[in-house]
Length: 321
Image (cartoon, rainbow, N blue to C red):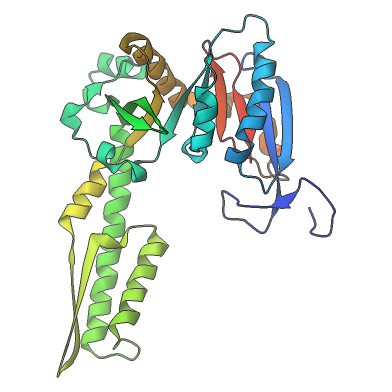
């Protein structure tokens, strides 16, 4: 949409793909999983963050869902980590018939992300059962269950581990570490040869920080040391083994949180949540409605960020921004 075109809802805001110059529209869509037909929709200005619009749109959506035939008495909201606003969970806590399962960034819960794998157990999922039948025990998804206080209340915490994802991330991580090491060797050579623009330690450190930003990797994985003497500036570096180890312990792990319930019922619900989250993207790829929206996406930016699932997973709810 052109900049001079007047619109109350097409606004510039934070874009998940970094295209902040584009005007975008917030879209909430309730879809029946069985028929793939839309049941309800709501639009909002593109400069309103989805977490701020959460309460308003949830009230509307739940009214529609609860009005459907054969609707269960309890609803489960599956929320991604972009929606982790304390106000949203306070709103859910006040509704006795509404419960949530949410992912949580490992960056903000590193104490959970670095838990050793010997404390994990094989998750009771259909995928794991199929792997066990094929004697592929090392490929099974693992899970660790605990509790903690989050958003003002005690919550159930499930940490999952995927060996396949961990291997992929480890390969990419090692490749980036090697790239940084090679660049640091070049930097050290330029400092030793007293090349132009390589005589100031602050400038060199800034180049290193920009390199890490470009590779999307933490700068604390290497330590750079500079020493000024009569012969000039000298540079040395070394890898930080502790930080590298801690980073690798987080690979392949996801954190899910939920309201505390009695163990048997809570465990089954969270296990179901794991399976739904795991099959979420594959379901999107098969849904005719979402395929149609893929064509629309060329004109209007849309990205599903959360969905509501009833106990029988009949009506997913997508909010697209």
